[in-house]
Amino acid sequence: MTQRPFTVALIIPTGIGAAIGGYAGDALPVARAMGSICDRLITHPNVLNGAQLYWPIPNALYVEGYGLDQFAAGRWGLRPVHGNRIGLILDQSIEPDLQIRHLQAADAARATLGLTLTDAVLTDQPLGVTLNTAASGATWGTIQNPDSLLRAAEKLIHEAGATAIAVVVRFPENISSEALYNYRHGQGVDPLAGAEAVISHLVVRTFGVPCAHAPALSPLPLDPNLSPRSAAEELGHTFLPCVLVGLSRAPQFIRGELQTHDIGTDAVDAVVIPESACGGSAVLSWSQTRTPTHTQIITVADNHTTLNVTPQSLGLSVWCAQSYSEALGMLVAMRAGINPNALTAKMLPIAFWENSLGEAKPATV
Image (cartoon, rainbow, N blue to C red; front, top):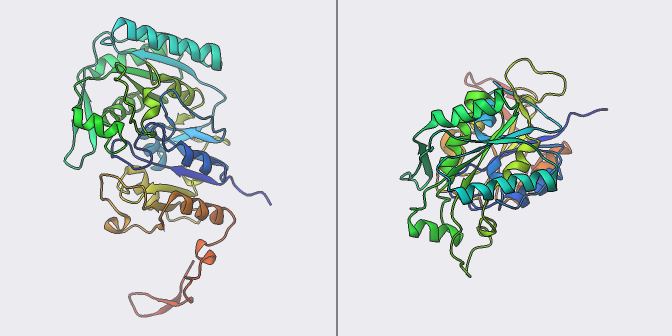
């Protein structure tokens, strides 16, 4: 008997200080392990991006956050591709030397990895990114000239034939010394992450093509006590390589009728999310599915964040895992058609369910 592909979504929201996935590619080991036990892994750039480090997971789909929300809500589908033609946007405010560094990184991806890129486009105005921090500690940001970003993307898509967009924006250097120190030592929230999400969301929402962002920053002074989780961002002059690799095979977004090999939201068997970050649009959409193939939500308690949006506070029905190791065990059981409770000594006897009229009805599992 042919079974449908076992499909898992791994979500670790950006800019909320996740203990795992809040740094430079430190969720990649989780993604690699999860990809090895499912047929398709749907995840997003915050999970797979590791600056100059990356890992090709053959069955992973690299889906930008706004597109992931639309997919989960059933508005968009995903169409896997063999390869994308990547358009590169550079912010006009990037210094000439740093522009050249990023162009050379793009050329290296073409020559060494065989990726397909268009010529780069420089925005007609500085994009003007500002960084902010919410009361919760989560980070966010704004763009002063979003129209300039959209004009550059439109040129690449409609004139250069780009099917995916990589954006490199000059980020401010006036990040508080305490916030930067904490992040470099594995204790704080990524000060850039919230603004990065705004940039990619804008392009994906407007044009419906895959997009991801790499910040342009001056190299930081050497720190011999750097956290391993932050170390990937200290290796060179650019964070662009992982973005280009991810976009090279990112699925296309389908806003109309799905074809045979397209993926719809009802194909997702399980979504794994930090326990304190359950309020995102995608998780709420999947929590409302009530079909025979409904999406099972699995929360991970050990992946602490600055948020406190728990499944209990939202009334969500979830499986609770203490760690990603336990979540992986749940997924293995789920794929085999085994209730994870059967692997423990905690199973309760089956009982009758009483409805509001007091009539006994058999419980369904």
